[in-house]
Image (cartoon, rainbow, N blue to C red; front, side):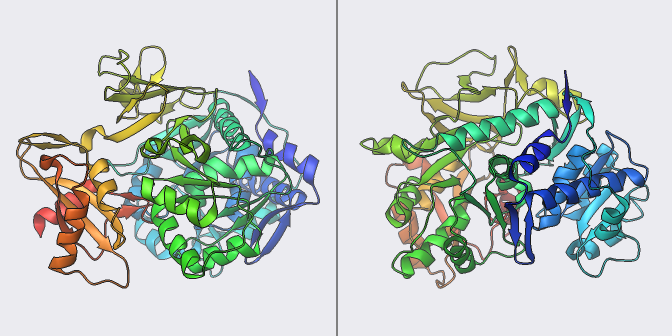
Length: 521
């Protein structure tokens, strides 16, 4: 089957032409202006000699040009390669070489990081977004000027790639997952269904909604919410994510009358600190998507903002949101606060299997597996990795562990490779981290096993909130508080660190790196 490459952009521009599509601190663009700029960019790259199927890396903080690039590349049949801003440039160079990228579009604030790798990337052309473009890069405006504002009306096979999205790199080198036009549309459809059914009595996403991006657009916030809101004529507000100011994020949420936002838990915590310090805020939030939350954080969110949240779970390859726990799900059932909910839509199936690909009974820990149009793809030029990532029947294996209860609620346990092997049994770091994070002094936490397999000890590295200094008394208090509900061999030794090795602005702790740091300490 063939599809119109930029069909979703054309759909939104035709229906909502004069409405505001994107707002940044630099100004706003209407849907018609956004589409025209996107088409100019895509055709401008084509004028440089690029052809459908060529790969184009995008490395930038949140800005309107990123949205223009995403939409323009898709309409031109070019393959967007996401370059996460939190990765070292050496990782980007490896990925760009692996996918044989033709162009890299970059925010000029990354110019100094790119410079040492230009020889290695000698076949790559560079396009610079922002002030002060280096002499070795073509300004973004020059590419726009070379293009046409008209829809290229390009038909493509639905199984051709539209995007390469690397995994987040928490369990080793990032792996380049390929989204085809079919699986990408499946992703957007999944998230539309998810957002439209967020709570009983809530209206579907529409032109009166405002979607705020405070986290990296090129991670989940863009992949999960950008297209769904644009397709319904809603306004997108972008905050520069180079640094995170929780007070500014809260101010923007109020001033822009935001109705939807995705926030990782480590960023939500300081935002709640601000809200509580102000004695609450007047807001219009209806859809707050949270990742990596604890039960205590969800209860705190309800108290501060109301039951406007869901707790999402998923991975790059699965097409998040895979499962979600809605605020309504826990009414009268506080035990469900520890779960990540049920399948976020009927477009996706979730199961638990053993390593042989056989289903396991409710309540038994096994591999979380999913299947849908979103996960019906492959890693770019990694056939062996792709083959080992699927069970028979099209079930994708993200290598996460968990169990389903009798009502189909998923309880996430941990990454399979991160399990700690103690003399008394297996310990799942995720569960220990949740216990440690209950203490109000802890800003973030990472748990690892130190020592030889079978004899490892559980160590929790904590980053304290900014106004607190570590002391033996405080660390002992955190450790004692974490023991409630844990078995004795799960009790952690708690140590303080000035900073945790994380990705995505603190959203995920890189446990392998943390383990190496603690072993060297």
